[in-house]
Structures are given as structure tokens and as C-alpha cells.
Length: 216
Image 1: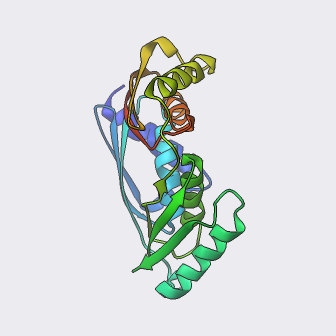
Image 2 (image 1 turned 45 degrees about the horizontal axis):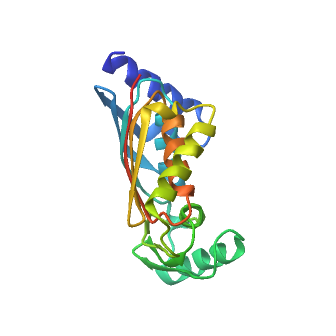
């Protein structure tokens, strides 16, 4: 697929997605790497634009350089914004009360600790959905005992084999001190995300070094 074709397909996908206002988004492509530039009205919309671009066949990487520019009535004082973020986190049953948030110039910094990666992901998603947020920095720590590296490797490998969309033979897993390295090739971003998700789901994993390539 040529770069011009990829630009057209990504632009069409952004236009098709009702969660994204593509009017002020410029798309560039270079050998499968897509760059998004321009402005959007919310941080969530910035995230949704990247997700939409990743859905397009032929996209191997997305550089999300979109800037969030709030309308005047969406701009919030940091103290008020922090209160709304903390309230949203508290109301979400997935996020434990060990998560805290501070706000500086509209950017949210999440701190504290949780046991599972999905809880970190949920906290980031909740914060991103609060009106007035310009960016989210996730510094939440993962806690809990570190199991035997062989157990982690075996559990992740078995999870990959159970996934009907993944060719487990094309993905290798290594583990050391709670850090998992996962590498290989997959044929879509959906498969990539499933493989990385399987790595994070193993008990005791504190970091994932994602070296998986999307190859069409």
C-alpha cells in the first residue's frame, strides 16, 4: 500500500468514527507509520483518533501528535479539575482507593498503587474522560509478590495458545524480576493488543517490554 493510499484510508476512518471530529486533523504516512497532527477538543478524542488509525490495514505504528485545545467553557481551574477526577475515580468500582491524582495546568498525574495492570488502565481511562483534562500521566505502581519467572512465562504462553486470533508460535516470552519481554510478529493491531494484554494479565507482572511487530 502506498503512503497516499494509507493517508486516504486513515482519513476516511477518522471521518467514519463518530467519536472523532476530524476537521482539524492532518494525516501523514511514511512506510506504514502514520502521524496525526492538528487539534481536538478533548483528551479522550485524542485517544480515540489513535485507536481509529490503528484499525486501518497497513498501519504499523501511530505517532499521535494531536494537541488538545479546550473551548472556553471547558477550561477548568486545576483544583476543580482534580476534584472531578478524584470523584470519577472513586465512583469507578474497578479503581481501588489507593489511587491518587494531582493536576498541573490541566495535566493529570496519577499516583499510588494497584495490584493489576487493568486497574491502572481503568484509572487512566476514567481520568481521560473528565472534561477539561489535557493529558494524563500514569505513574501508578504495581505491587504484589513476584512469582517464579518460569511460572509467568508458562502462564503467558498458555494464554497466547488459548487465544483463537493469535499464532502463539510466532510470539516468544521471557521473564525476569517481574518484567516480561514479549516479541514476535502479528498480522493486526488487534492481535498485538491481545498479546500484550495476555502478558499484563499474568499475576506478578510489573512491566512489559513490548517488542511485537505488526506485519501485513
